[in-house]
Length: 247
Image (cartoon, rainbow, N blue to C red; front, side, top):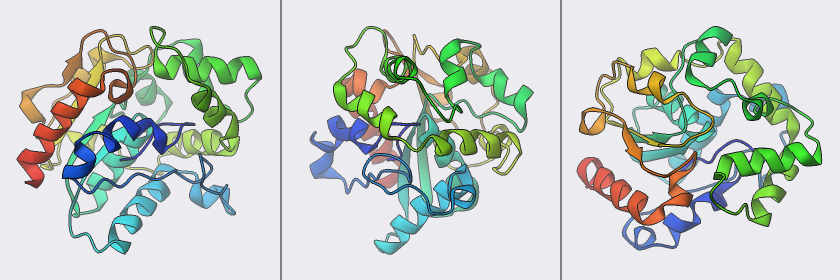
């Protein structure tokens, strides 16, 4: 499980502490510059999607795993797509809040909505008001933003936000649209009906090569992070997906 931008692996506690945590070996970690992980000693080399994918694959390899199912939330979904393109150990991938976009600013903007909150995704230094806005837009307007979420955004190394976006726009990662439209790795695409950050029309219009259930799954009355907002429904869906492709 790979978490979202400026948050931490705690976003998955409603999965880890559920019956899923007893049924599956769940691996969740804080990306460099996030949560309890250290800031990167070499930011230019570490704060980019391919490097994050390498770190996740290295963790799986260090545990002796020959195959994994990956769930990526928002930024984590983009990391998961990069892993799917590069690492055979990825047997299936579930993403949410992560529109698979092409290379360059124009392609990136196709997948995201032109709102003030999205301008914060790659901003290095956030004001206290912007920290709160970032956290609240992530968790959804209909839920109370918990203190740890605001603390996570404030703690995040701002260079990680800036450099990840800069590297992505420069084309250091795979063309994610091409990946999902060509890879035969089973892909589940989950999105909240009221996600304030992503363009759902763009996501539904892609020609996926092997999408689970034939189309993206929309969670009614959910925003950007269904795993936190609607854990019972999300956990059921995640279990069904994992059962089908991991056994």
